[in-house]
Length: 114
Length: 112
Image 1 (cartoon, rainbow over the protein chains, first blue to last red):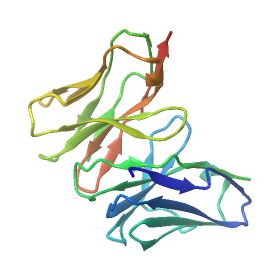
Image 2 (image 1 turned 30 degrees about the vertical axis):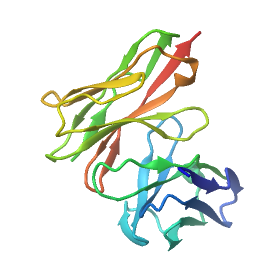
Image 3 (image 1 turned 135 degrees about the vertical axis):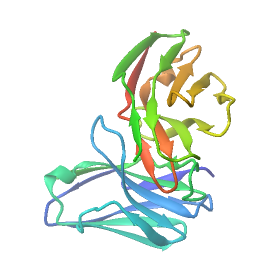
Image 4 (image 1 turned 180 degrees about the vertical axis):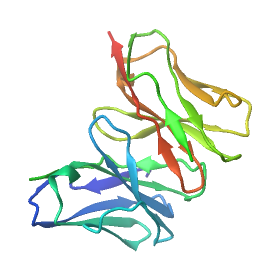
Protein backbone atom coordinates (compact mmCIF):
# COMPACT_ATOMS: atom_id res chain seq x y z
CA UNK A 1 0.00 0.00 0.00
CA UNK A 2 1.74 3.16 -1.23
CA UNK A 3 -1.18 5.50 -0.74
CA UNK A 4 -1.66 8.64 1.20
CA UNK A 5 -5.38 9.21 1.66
CA UNK A 6 -6.85 12.64 2.27
CA UNK A 7 -10.40 13.49 3.25
CA UNK A 8 -12.46 15.30 2.28
CA UNK A 9 -11.55 15.89 -1.36
CA UNK A 10 -13.46 19.17 -1.43
CA UNK A 11 -14.48 21.48 1.41
CA UNK A 12 -16.39 24.75 1.45
CA UNK A 13 -16.45 26.59 4.78
CA UNK A 14 -17.47 29.95 6.14
CA UNK A 15 -15.05 32.23 7.92
CA UNK A 16 -16.61 31.42 11.29
CA UNK A 17 -16.64 27.66 10.81
CA UNK A 18 -14.36 25.06 12.38
CA UNK A 19 -13.38 22.14 10.19
CA UNK A 20 -10.64 19.53 9.97
CA UNK A 21 -8.68 17.98 7.15
CA UNK A 22 -7.54 14.39 7.57
CA UNK A 23 -4.61 12.46 6.17
CA UNK A 24 -3.78 8.78 6.58
CA UNK A 25 -0.90 6.57 5.48
CA UNK A 26 -0.11 2.93 6.17
CA UNK A 27 3.41 2.75 4.77
CA UNK A 28 5.07 2.95 8.18
CA UNK A 29 6.44 6.38 7.35
CA UNK A 30 7.65 8.39 10.32
CA UNK A 31 7.47 11.85 8.79
CA UNK A 32 4.30 13.56 7.63
CA UNK A 33 3.83 16.95 6.04
CA UNK A 34 1.20 19.56 5.27
CA UNK A 35 1.58 21.74 2.19
CA UNK A 36 -0.53 24.58 0.83
CA UNK A 37 -0.73 25.03 -2.93
CA UNK A 38 -2.32 27.99 -4.67
CA UNK A 39 -3.37 27.71 -8.31
CA UNK A 40 -0.47 27.47 -10.75
CA UNK A 41 2.05 27.73 -7.93
CA UNK A 42 4.34 25.17 -6.32
CA UNK A 43 3.46 23.64 -2.97
CA UNK A 44 4.51 25.61 0.11
CA UNK A 45 5.54 23.67 3.17
CA UNK A 46 3.44 24.41 6.27
CA UNK A 47 4.26 21.77 8.90
CA UNK A 48 6.49 18.74 9.36
CA UNK A 49 5.85 16.01 11.91
CA UNK A 50 8.65 13.61 12.70
CA UNK A 51 7.93 10.63 14.92
CA UNK A 52 4.60 12.22 15.82
CA UNK A 53 6.21 15.42 17.06
CA UNK A 54 6.00 18.77 15.34
CA UNK A 55 9.47 19.50 14.02
CA UNK A 56 8.84 22.36 11.62
CA UNK A 57 6.25 25.13 11.57
CA UNK A 58 6.90 27.46 8.66
CA UNK A 59 5.45 30.50 10.44
CA UNK A 60 1.93 29.41 9.70
CA UNK A 61 -0.89 31.51 11.25
CA UNK A 62 -2.49 30.02 14.35
CA UNK A 63 -5.83 29.62 12.58
CA UNK A 64 -4.21 26.46 11.19
CA UNK A 65 -3.58 23.88 13.90
CA UNK A 66 -1.93 20.56 13.06
CA UNK A 67 -2.31 17.40 15.07
CA UNK A 68 -0.68 13.99 14.79
CA UNK A 69 -2.70 11.52 16.89
CA UNK A 70 -0.54 8.56 15.85
CA UNK A 71 2.08 7.58 13.31
CA UNK A 72 -0.51 6.94 10.60
CA UNK A 73 -2.73 9.97 10.99
CA UNK A 74 -2.29 13.68 10.48
CA UNK A 75 -4.99 16.28 10.94
CA UNK A 76 -5.18 19.96 10.12
CA UNK A 77 -7.72 21.86 12.19
CA UNK A 78 -9.09 25.02 10.63
CA UNK A 79 -10.73 27.92 12.44
CA UNK A 80 -11.58 31.49 11.49
CA UNK A 81 -10.04 31.19 8.05
CA UNK A 82 -9.88 33.98 5.51
CA UNK A 83 -10.84 33.83 1.82
CA UNK A 84 -7.15 34.01 0.90
CA UNK A 85 -6.68 30.65 2.65
CA UNK A 86 -8.59 29.02 -0.19
CA UNK A 87 -6.16 26.59 -1.80
CA UNK A 88 -5.29 22.95 -2.36
CA UNK A 89 -3.95 21.39 0.85
CA UNK A 90 -1.62 18.48 0.26
CA UNK A 91 -0.50 15.91 2.76
CA UNK A 92 2.67 13.90 2.24
CA UNK A 93 4.65 11.26 4.06
CA UNK A 94 8.18 9.90 3.87
CA UNK A 95 10.16 7.27 5.68
CA UNK A 96 12.36 9.95 7.18
CA UNK A 97 12.55 13.71 7.38
CA UNK A 98 16.21 13.55 6.49
CA UNK A 99 17.56 14.81 3.24
CA UNK A 100 16.83 12.99 0.08
CA UNK A 101 13.83 11.06 1.17
CA UNK A 102 11.16 10.90 -1.43
CA UNK A 103 7.75 12.01 -0.33
CA UNK A 104 4.47 10.36 -1.23
CA UNK A 105 1.61 12.80 -1.68
CA UNK A 106 -2.11 12.51 -1.27
CA UNK A 107 -4.56 13.89 -3.81
CA UNK A 108 -5.25 16.92 -1.70
CA UNK A 109 -8.25 18.71 -0.26
CA UNK A 110 -9.57 21.60 -2.33
CA UNK A 111 -10.59 24.19 0.29
CA UNK A 112 -12.80 27.17 -0.46
CA UNK A 113 -13.38 29.77 2.24
CA UNK A 114 -16.47 31.92 1.70
CA UNK B 1 19.46 29.37 1.21
CA UNK B 2 18.07 27.18 -1.51
CA UNK B 3 16.59 28.38 -4.77
CA UNK B 4 15.17 26.38 -7.64
CA UNK B 5 14.44 27.97 -11.02
CA UNK B 6 12.38 26.57 -13.85
CA UNK B 7 12.61 29.02 -16.72
CA UNK B 8 9.97 27.43 -18.98
CA UNK B 9 6.45 28.16 -17.71
CA UNK B 10 4.84 26.17 -20.53
CA UNK B 11 5.97 23.68 -23.13
CA UNK B 12 4.35 21.43 -25.68
CA UNK B 13 5.53 18.32 -27.48
CA UNK B 14 4.10 16.02 -30.12
CA UNK B 15 3.17 12.55 -29.01
CA UNK B 16 6.11 10.11 -29.37
CA UNK B 17 8.65 12.95 -29.52
CA UNK B 18 11.27 13.89 -26.93
CA UNK B 19 11.15 16.95 -24.71
CA UNK B 20 13.55 18.41 -22.16
CA UNK B 21 12.48 20.47 -19.16
CA UNK B 22 15.11 22.65 -17.55
CA UNK B 23 15.84 23.30 -13.90
CA UNK B 24 18.66 25.18 -12.20
CA UNK B 25 19.23 25.34 -8.49
CA UNK B 26 21.43 26.86 -5.88
CA UNK B 27 22.28 25.37 -2.54
CA UNK B 28 24.91 25.83 0.12
CA UNK B 29 24.78 22.17 1.14
CA UNK B 30 27.32 19.62 0.01
CA UNK B 31 25.04 16.61 0.20
CA UNK B 32 21.63 17.02 -1.34
CA UNK B 33 19.11 15.36 -3.58
CA UNK B 34 17.13 16.57 -6.54
CA UNK B 35 13.72 15.41 -7.68
CA UNK B 36 11.25 15.83 -10.47
CA UNK B 37 7.58 15.59 -9.56
CA UNK B 38 4.62 15.41 -11.90
CA UNK B 39 1.21 16.86 -11.01
CA UNK B 40 -1.53 15.91 -13.49
CA UNK B 41 -4.99 17.47 -13.40
CA UNK B 42 -5.93 14.84 -10.82
CA UNK B 43 -3.82 16.99 -8.45
CA UNK B 44 -1.68 14.25 -6.93
CA UNK B 45 2.05 14.96 -6.88
CA UNK B 46 3.87 11.93 -8.25
CA UNK B 47 7.60 11.36 -7.96
CA UNK B 48 9.09 10.92 -11.43
CA UNK B 49 12.80 10.61 -10.76
CA UNK B 50 15.40 11.33 -8.13
CA UNK B 51 19.10 12.16 -8.34
CA UNK B 52 21.65 11.94 -5.56
CA UNK B 53 24.12 14.81 -5.88
CA UNK B 54 27.15 12.72 -4.92
CA UNK B 55 26.49 10.33 -7.80
CA UNK B 56 27.90 11.35 -11.16
CA UNK B 57 25.76 8.93 -13.11
CA UNK B 58 22.53 10.42 -14.38
CA UNK B 59 19.36 8.82 -13.04
CA UNK B 60 17.07 7.00 -15.45
CA UNK B 61 13.55 5.69 -14.94
CA UNK B 62 12.05 4.10 -18.04
CA UNK B 63 11.25 6.97 -20.47
CA UNK B 64 12.48 9.60 -18.01
CA UNK B 65 16.10 10.57 -17.57
CA UNK B 66 18.00 13.51 -16.16
CA UNK B 67 21.00 15.48 -17.26
CA UNK B 68 22.68 16.42 -14.00
CA UNK B 69 25.46 18.99 -14.31
CA UNK B 70 26.64 19.56 -10.75
CA UNK B 71 29.14 22.31 -11.48
CA UNK B 72 26.55 24.24 -13.45
CA UNK B 73 23.86 23.40 -10.88
CA UNK B 74 21.61 22.21 -13.64
CA UNK B 75 19.12 19.33 -13.44
CA UNK B 76 17.08 18.89 -16.62
CA UNK B 77 14.46 16.21 -17.24
CA UNK B 78 14.24 14.43 -20.58
CA UNK B 79 11.03 12.65 -21.49
CA UNK B 80 11.38 10.24 -24.42
CA UNK B 81 8.51 8.85 -26.49
CA UNK B 82 6.08 11.35 -24.95
CA UNK B 83 2.62 10.01 -24.17
CA UNK B 84 -0.69 11.79 -23.67
CA UNK B 85 -0.58 10.78 -20.01
CA UNK B 86 2.56 12.85 -19.58
CA UNK B 87 0.47 16.02 -19.81
CA UNK B 88 0.92 17.66 -16.40
CA UNK B 89 2.72 20.28 -14.35
CA UNK B 90 6.29 19.28 -13.65
CA UNK B 91 8.05 20.58 -10.56
CA UNK B 92 11.75 20.38 -9.87
CA UNK B 93 12.59 20.06 -6.18
CA UNK B 94 15.78 20.21 -4.16
CA UNK B 95 16.04 18.27 -0.91
CA UNK B 96 18.19 19.23 1.99
CA UNK B 97 17.87 18.27 5.62
CA UNK B 98 14.29 19.13 6.46
CA UNK B 99 14.40 21.89 3.85
CA UNK B 100 12.37 21.46 0.73
CA UNK B 101 12.35 23.91 -2.16
CA UNK B 102 10.18 23.55 -5.24
CA UNK B 103 10.61 25.34 -8.54
CA UNK B 104 7.73 27.31 -10.04
CA UNK B 105 6.77 24.50 -12.39
CA UNK B 106 6.57 23.82 -16.12
CA UNK B 107 3.22 23.02 -17.68
CA UNK B 108 3.74 20.32 -20.31
CA UNK B 109 1.12 19.62 -22.96
CA UNK B 110 1.49 16.50 -25.09
CA UNK B 111 -0.25 16.98 -28.42
CA UNK B 112 -1.78 13.99 -30.24
